[in-house]
Length: 337
Image (cartoon, rainbow, N blue to C red):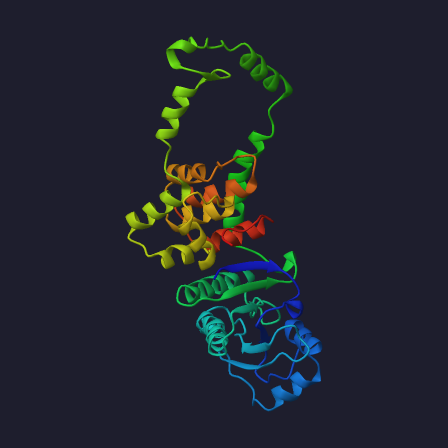
């Protein structure tokens, strides 16, 4: 199942489990920890008292009590001490331990905060990268729906250089698409209206016509109908030597949706879905454009969403979770579904 970054209040998430960024005592604190304890009620604290604390990088589970979630998974992230004290390894362990507990308790949907990025001082862009990489790797092995919950945009950041590079890439393309002068638009309209009209051939040469289109020509065109999106997708999967599961997981696509596409030769995906498969297959830009065309779409420089995806494909970065980080940072829809 896919991985999504969302803006929400984690205590309101209707999922099987939410993850609490706790301290080693498990007795509550500030930030997300305090909010979860308040929402769950005093029974949560009473249960946590019996657990004997939790070591950094590990996780323990309790019922959700008054929360919409069935469980709370409590994990302890590392305090940032400059990056040379094993912080990354401990943070990876905190995410993975939580995910393993979720699987052990038959959870299908899990919501995480950005662990250690608050009072523990872990740089937000680095904390985000660890979260995305660790969750993404885990989902290659397990079927879960995982949400990374960001309470507000101020708490979210991608790397400064990446943000600047994407912003410049957007500016170079998006701005020029929207800044045609009135004179240029008028000149193009004159050129179009002045274009020579092609005379239609006599109908007796080609058979009956509909408007200016010969039915004989139309029949020939239909006989040569190109392969569909579904056919191209399955062909590319075979050419890449991938399994279906490898492809839909890399595309951040649910297995049920992939089954629909595979079973229906005429299936028309949404644009984010078509783009997600182009990324999963690591298609070069021209082939990615062709795959979009099969679904009835095209890359547009009038769309920031399209430009951002194009940026990553042009730079041969096919990590769909990193692409979604950037899309989220620029307030765009995410790839996959």
